[in-house]
Each structure stands twice: as C-alpha cells, then as structure tokens.
Image (cartoon, rainbow, N blue to C red; front, side, top):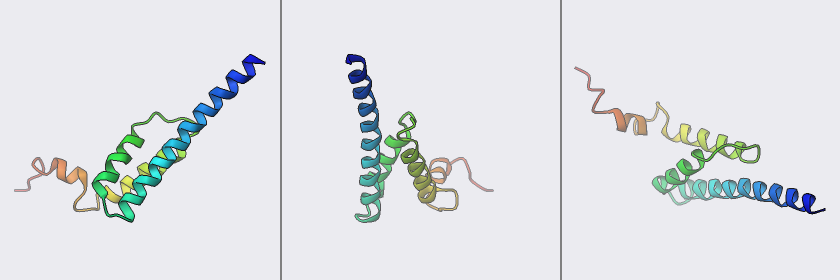
Length: 92
C-alpha cells in the first residue's frame, strides 16, 4: 500500500511539472500576443526550452520552440541570430 501511494505521489508530481510548464507557455504567449512584451515572453520561452524534456512536457517544449522559430527565425530581419552575428557578417 505504501508503495502504491509513493508511486502515485511521484506520478502526480511529474504531471504537475508538465502543467507548470504549460502554464508558463500560456503566460509567455499572453505577454507576447496580448501585451506586446516580446522580450519578457522570450525570457520565459528560453526557460521552457531549457527544461529537460519528459513525456509530460514535450508537447509544451515543442510548441515553445516552434513559437520561437516563428518569431525569431532566419526570415525575420530582426532575428536574434542576425543581431548576434551581425558584426561577423559584414559584406564587402
């Protein structure tokens, strides 16, 4: 009986972590789309993307990476990659 309770508690804790990450994503998405606070959203997106993937949170991490790619992909002139490597990419 104690073993079952311990396993159930562990499962609930892991599921809770997945839910927390999902809530973080929703917060970032709201900041980005409704409030226009893209830098704040990017900070949260980075935190989510840096989280170790599990079965419970992999969908949220995928959504986050997709969102970051859409916002800051190579086709965007203000992309993070271009800002970061602009000094190196001078064309002569």
